Image (tube, rainbow, N blue to C red; front, side):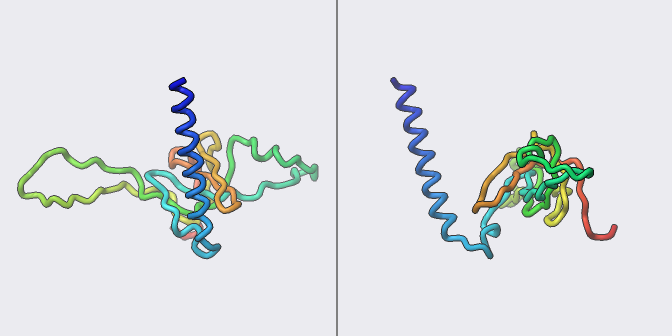
Length: 148
């Protein structure tokens, strides 16, 4: 009985979260809908490319075939700050109290074409568009337009 009550409480909290998220997302318009998203840690937000509907020989593929591929590609829309560098535990009297968190930046940058493993990605539907949240470790290769 107690397990059922706990389950119901979690379900109610989830419904309240979804309701609050829907109300929050309604305030966003198409111009700023991605500006308010914050990607955490070493993750990137990727908008997948539309899969080819035909093979090289001209055969039409059913809609679910490309989605079952182990590797997909898409453009990086937003990136997280990177890997957190742990702060030393020492309490030195000469150090300031306002130590800023430091990060090792990611190799991926916004606008890069990324080829990534779907097994390491999390699929998200936001404002009717499909995105993947992918950790940097699941990205196999990047294509960047800038010159080296």
